[in-house]
Length: 383
Length: 186
Image 1 (cartoon, rainbow over the protein chains, first blue to last red):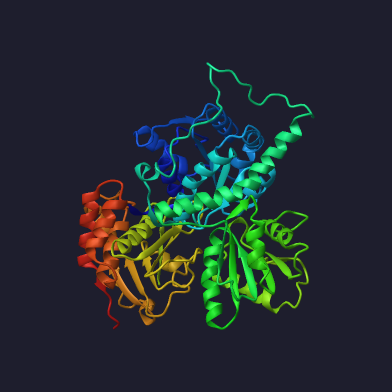
Image 2 (cartoon, rainbow over the protein chains, first blue to last red):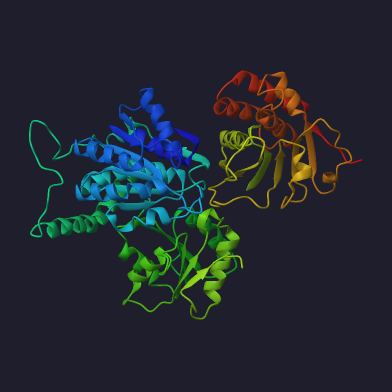
């Protein structure tokens, strides 16, 4: 049924449709309405799940690890500082190969305190081994939650779905809400092949000597590599069931584009409006949205960008002392295979608005610069 | 695309007003988007919320800087905040007030309509006498003055989005729809 709902609730409805068995969360800031609605759904019986309220995000993820190891489909949500507090246990979930799904609302990290959006919280968890998928609409958010459980359970790795604070989390728009009955054929109940069980003993998270640790790490990397195909298959199957698919990346008017803007999150959506405006002026420009960030879609990114003459990456994040993080990743996807100039633009940190005017400024700069003079361009920074 | 900016104060229901408006247009088959200007909400502080309405997918995901129309829940904001910044010429301004508007400077460039939403909200027991919740009345007035959306759709949206006193809110919406007054230039 189509309803006008906020992004946070799109997450909650996706979780409801996925018939999770355990939700654990810290209930206070930086928490959002995601778990507020989920706790109501658990209380009124809409979801047949155990809701475990805990005193910190570290404990929330720990409870998810325990529940997932016991064979339950498990979910949590957090944001900014909350995600950072989970860091240690994010590693645990990966090492134990647990298919937990987490929704992170992208909020800037303090101090100075901010409740507004940027991507440094989730991107600072880049190397823990969670899959990361960035959404641009409330519909995509709900659908990606449902897809994520299927992906996670197939590859035995946890999945983080990421959405911009406010520009998605608090924005109301139309969502075709899926019910559990509709979703069950696509996402059957989770059956763990190994679980904590009092009748059959296994050891979980034991000591691994140098003789075996490396093999276990290799297997995680292998699962990540293989997950690209799984994500593709799950997305296609979702499309067959519900008529919507999203891809690992989403190119827009890139076929004959001389310049391509690379974006993620809600900026990707606004950028398409700017691309149309510039196309109407006869400028050959396109946009590439990166939806799946881990595993990084090297081939898809290369295939689209290698036909362009110039690439500009917009980052709502910064790796201090290096570059924008999507910029680094895109550059590594092109390295050694092409000499297309690529420039990075930092915009919208701490929730500063990335308007069509800002995107147009970046596009014009990217086109007029003969060769990018500096690899990092800060957009709209006041003197 | 129609872009509407709503100005009010924390506690008047400005954010819900932007959502009711979106829901009403959705019920008429439009694509919609509604969201607040993101801040740390406090009772009494100026609040801004936005609504976008279009015939196709809405791709802009940023605040509205050049609205087509304004909804103003607190007339004192006219003197304290530059509410018309970016407002397109000839755009509607729907104001909650009981003071005469015939001499208003706003009439030079904009179409103005007024409604005593405070009196209507108090009549139906919405909020308190000191801080009435005027969002449902002002949306009724918006529909009545502009004709951009039907009363029927607004009433259904009110029923969907208002958490309590649904019947009283519907009555307030209907009364404001009928009593909204379009100000003529002198």
